[in-house]
Each structure stands twice: as structure tokens, then as C-alpha cells.
Length: 605
Ligand SMILES: [Zn+2]
View (tube, rainbow, N blue to C red):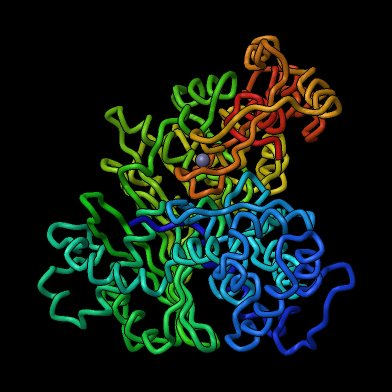
């Protein structure tokens, strides 16, 4: 079993809409352009496909049994299903298709139309190609079904293509809907033995529970929490949100940065589930009014995971968010993160310097800490003393002394840094520079012979220097303390399994040529020789129909050359710094992104 992104998010929005535009208590009326069943029967008679008597008998039986006339005509062998479809398709001017019972539809395609809507309006998804979803309809002329489809397509951001199907084909597809609730129940029993919470030698920050202790506790809830954790880790989710709504408990998973509703549970399990998670992470069960933080460690299918838990009160009760951390895959090498060419060279060169700051900038969620961990991993190979100050600690790395900032008790980046500097480390990682004190201390640490890895909030690499100056760092200290400045963003990586090339429109080619014109000679090698081609991924089984799998960074970096040093001490403006960075041959984030689009790693969007 595997959990897939977005399985019920449409369903969720669908059934919580206070007033749906296609609610069944609207007055029934027939759309002027569409036809009703009688028009089609008249057409069949006119075309001599059925006799007037056959039609009359079928109508009587339809009224008596409450079954559609068309189904009765097929039952009575007045015409075959295929004949009916082809006649009606031609009559309504829409394509038709017969779907056999062997036709299998990917779960990701099925999820495009919520089960409830599929049953009420007799509409089912058939296939998906990018944003285009083929939708099978028994009654394409039904105005309510049309409105429902329009609404669902807008919500799900797809373009529906109507296909006429028979009720037999419809039955073949509707059978493939599996209720999520059922899946959870199924998973509950299946997975009972599969997840064990590890006890034994663990750092004090982790709560260790023995399997025996867990089995003594309320078993169904234990299983339910295990299932949620397993689904999240299996699906590669980065976060789990467990949120009480007015009448249900919503569980959402964040996948590649996007939150998807995964499971809706009855609200009465809420207190027990929250208590269970609190027990695992050593939090106070009876404290429900204050936020709490904790973590626990678990082995799922032989893979180790850290779960970092935060609870906080909401109007409906306590919400729990869990960050899923896979310590084994969490730390990746720089090229795997998408650093390449000159940017990679600058970074590799920068961390070989005996001291200096390596500053990484970008907004929250741009993968800055992932890059810091990659750098730490490289430095960690040497026999050196590495200390980190983090908020939060996202991955534990053997050999690195990691400590967590606790601003509420006065252990800030600045006070922690002062403390650390007394301990004579070689490398210091400071999670983030967000105030003047920390900025000055970090500069001081770099000037006194330390390698300092840190992040800062700016929009570009060249914005880093002016930001430091804004924070009160003397410009003349910057050239000798800053080794590398890099900015980054995260993009969704195209699925390797289903991506394919297409030739972009001339105006897109013109844009690409314009933006890449200033690329340094060496980086031009990344432009494919056989002309500009871009990529799309329509979605497949491997990517749950999303066309995206994982993420990749785009980067820009500058080096501290002697020209750069001069500019910083004389005229520290972002414009001047950018000019020098361009002269050095900096590849901008935009250019890096465009090159990655041409290389087929991301889409142009
Ligand atoms: Zn795919």
C-alpha cells in the first residue's frame, strides 16, 4: 500500500463548501442548449434505429422501474451498448468510449473526482495528461452534472474533456473507488506489527519507548498513530499536521512543500491521538493550553526517522505538527542539491579556506538549512571541532556538537555564540543571523579564525553584504570575514519517469536567448547544442500523477575577489556589488533556473 498525495483534498473542499453551486435542492431545469432523453429517443425513432412501439414500451418500463430508458433499450436488445453510445455521441456531438472491466485507473487519476460527486452526478475520471482530464459521463447533457464537473475541475485545477460512457462502463470505474476511511482501517490492522518504537541508547532529547510499554497502551490509537507516521514517511512527507476542526480531525501531509489532506477522522479520537503523540515525545499530557515541543525516534520498515513534535492550542483544541526527519537521507552532497558549474566551484573553494563566513540567503523554505548540512558534512570529514547552534535541529550529524536555541529562556543565537566561542571550535554553524548582535559576533568569529556557516534573509546573493551593513557590521570588516555569499530557491523537480521534451514557442525561445545572453562562456556549455527544448511531465504512477518528484535548488553565488573587497569598503551598494558579481561571471538564480529547465530538471514555470 502506498499513500498518495492529494488523495482526498478535493473531496474535502467539496464536502465542506457551505453552499455548493450544484446543490440538489436547486430547481431542476434543462439547459437551453442541451437535450433531454426524449429528444434522443425521438432521434432514434427518426433514424429508424428503434421503432415507435419499442420506444413507447421502453418509456413505460422506465417509468415503472425508475431505470433510464437507454438502459432498458439495451436490456431489450433494441440496440447494443456500442450502437447506443455511437448514436448518442453523434447526437450530442461528443466522443464516446466503452470501458471494459479490465480498465485500471491510477489512484491519482481517480482522486480527481471525489467519490460522492462521481456517484451523484455519474461522472468518473478516465485518464489524465498534464492538466487535461478525460471525464466519463453517463448524462453529459445533464446540466447539474455539467455544473458539478465545472466546479470540481476549477478546484482541482484541471481541464475536463467530456466523454460519453454507458452505465456499464460507469460501473466498471466506480468500483475502483476505495474509501480512504476503509484504507485507514485496513492499514490499522496490517501495520500493527510493522512499526516499532525504538528504545535503548538515545540522546536525552529523544524520548525512547519500549515496544512493551506501547502495547500496554490503548492499542487502536497506537496503531492509528503508527499508520499516520508510516504513511507520512512512506510518501516522503516532510510534515504531518493533525488539526481538530469543528466536527472532524484532519490529518494533512506536506509533500514537496504542499499540504495535502490525507485522512479525515472522527473528532472523538482527537484527545487520544494527541495524548499518544505526547507520550511518545515526552510531553505533558495534561498541559493543553501552552505550546510544547518534543521529539521521538522510530524505526519504520528498517529505516530510522526522527519526528519533531510541536503542539499548540487552537479554538478547537490542540493542534499537533510533526516534522518528519530522515537522518540517513537528510544530508546530501552539494551536486545532488543542484549546485553546479561556477556556483559549485565557488562553494567548494569557499569551504576550503581556513576561516571566513559562508552566508546562504533565501526565504523560509528555500532549502538553506539543507545546504548548510551538506557543507557541514563535507567539513565533518576532517578531524576538527564543529559546533552548531540551531533553531530547530533538523538533522542529527554524528561528530557535530549540535545545540538548540531556546529564545524563551534567553539562550539565543547571540548568547549561544558567545558561549561557543569560549570552547575553541574550528567550525561554527549558526542557524540564522537575524539581529545585529548575532551578525557582529559571527563576523568576529570569522575574523578570529573560524569557519562560520550561516543563513540570512535577503532576496539575492548580492543583497547579503548590504544586509550585514544594515545590521551594524562595519563595511571594512566584511572583506576579510565573508568568504562566500550564496542565494537560493527551491523548485519542484520534474518526474524522470514521465517527463518529455517539447519545442517552445518562438517568443519563449527569444526570452531564453535574451536571459542567457550574458552567461559566461563556460556555463554556455549547459545549453543543449540541438536547440532550445523544454520539458513537461504529464504525471504517471511513479509520481502519483503529479509530474513532479522531489525538489531541486537554483543558486547564485559571488566570490570575495579583490575587486569585490574594494567596492565593499568604498561604495557598498547592492548595484555596485551586482555589477562586480556579473563581471566575475555570476550565474543568476534566474539563469540557473532556465538552464535547469533546458536540462529537463524543472519545468519553465
Ligand atoms: Zn511521473
